[in-house]
Image 1: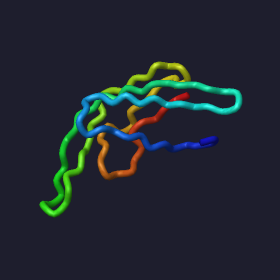
Image 2: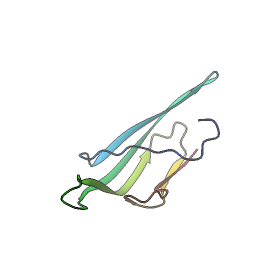
Image 3: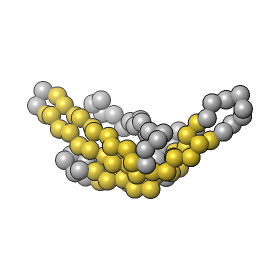
Length: 90
């Protein structure tokens, strides 16, 4: 993950708030931080032949602050679009 600029994070279908633990480790480092993502979940139907997808609207994000300085919501709607939704500042 050295030099990574993008990261895909999973969101649950059933919970109103997801808790994600990020673990960064190496020969001389071992850090964990936690993200809490508060969101609404909306079922999205394309057609009767397709399974239901879930769209999300991010309402708030907070972090423990161990190695993450802050998190910015850049696009609150999480759908098919592969746009950036969160920017994590280290």
